[in-house]
Image (tube, rainbow, N blue to C red; front, side, top):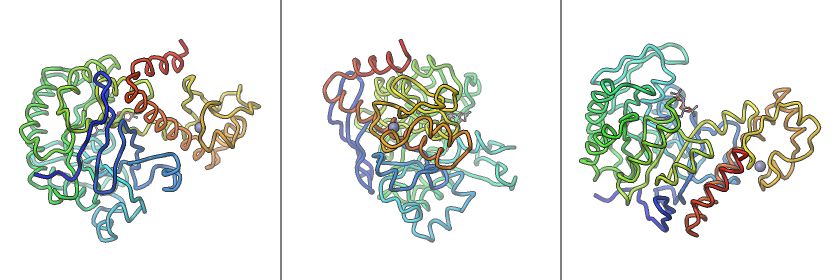
Length: 373
Ligand SMILES: CC1(C)O[C@@H]2[C@@H](CO[C@@]3(CNc4nc5cc6c(=O)[nH]c(N)nc6cc5[nH]4)OC(C)(C)O[C@@H]23)O1
Ligand SMILES: [Zn+2]
């Protein structure tokens, strides 16, 4: 079966890969960071600004867009790309995770998940079929399977039946997927922090491999210790199909991203860069900088003296600190713009390092400076 989303490896450096993903809305160079646009916008960023910072693909959320403005409304208006005037690739998460981390009073049954909206408490139900139907309505280039992401540090006794139900849900997603020619489907590997359960999840999903354009590693960045995440990545990523993209869900800290790329990850997303930005924390080559600190009150330097972004070329720490302190919207925009630029540039630099077979040295040098060692 011809898949609408395909991947080509250009270079390898150890397990790290540089490649290109082809989608119905264009190509994506990897490794890639995907800004999260939960409610059809990457918070405070215009489309033009996202293009300026070099964003190639953004994320949308099934759960949020189903609740507001509703996926059928978006479909009637021509789909999510047209609705938000974004003509590059979009990946949509399937809603399961958001129900667990946002919704309340949820009940998980074989048929699907019953939950109350975090907005007005109204009662809702999402099944694998419903999640795929919503993603079909949104018209994203990449849709995610409807899965259960077990709470961080769940026991084996909880995870084993959860994997088995998530596999049964995966089959139902594949059967329900109506846009097999224009929307790629990514599998999501679960299994908590247990190598053998990760293998079990991957083996069960691999039986449906012909339907999957890529494999995501779910169930991480949900509160487990960092070393457990690294151990699991080191085990499971290289066991995913070599010729398809690997996507680590929910990771957006520079050091974690470089470690993930070293284990063979190609795609990542996270709300952190924009969420931290809105609270005044920005990324710099010398680590995180909390702009509200007194020490920046009269600091005329840019956020990061080596950053070439529009914000660092035009505004000082003192000015941005003032804006954040008085909660001016422009402050949120400037810190968000810089944080997204920083991560997207980090991915581009990592890609060059892989092509030049110097990724390990690149990673170690970055981390040494970022962690101030
Ligand atoms: C639980 C909790 C507290 O984890 C938080 C916060 C919000 O999510 C994170 C990032 N982590 C994260 N892991 C994920 C796992 C899955 C998954 O297994 N399946 C599917 N379909 N989508 C996923 C999306 C994910 N995002 O965002 C920050 C804030 C980085 O920390 C995380 O909710
Ligand atoms: Zn900058």
